[in-house]
Length: 165
Image (cartoon, rainbow, N blue to C red; front, top):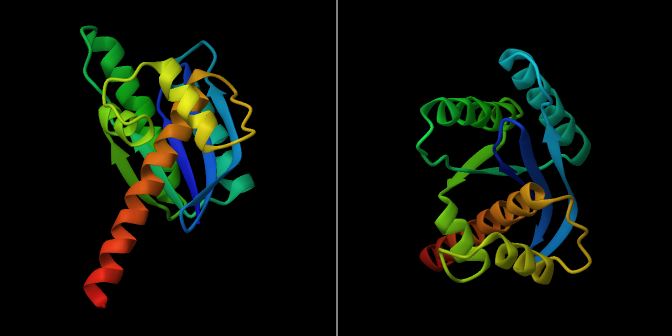
């Protein structure tokens, strides 16, 4: 199974693809979709098109998106929400099931504590995906989201096997 993790952002949308085989995780690719400057609609189209290209190239079978938090800047929160809409729309249109995870849940799954900082997350992503070359902090966060989703799917599959046995 291939999992696409997406860290939504209007300026920089991180993405990461991992391969999950049993309990093994393998890095496939990671990067950052950049929207540039200009009109909001044009920036959203750019993110949409770049994310579609990622899905077409790496053929994930599942996706996971980080949930949005509300910050003090209402306008910034709305723009982030619109970028998150793109992060949900593109994989949904590709027919992928999408998991959504709060930032603290992602950190707990990858680092072991829900209030880890970015450096700790990046370090643990590198440990869990040996040889990975991170394309930046947003891509590292996206890989962490994919790892969190992989752990969640593995737990669900183990539970289903126990119930059916």
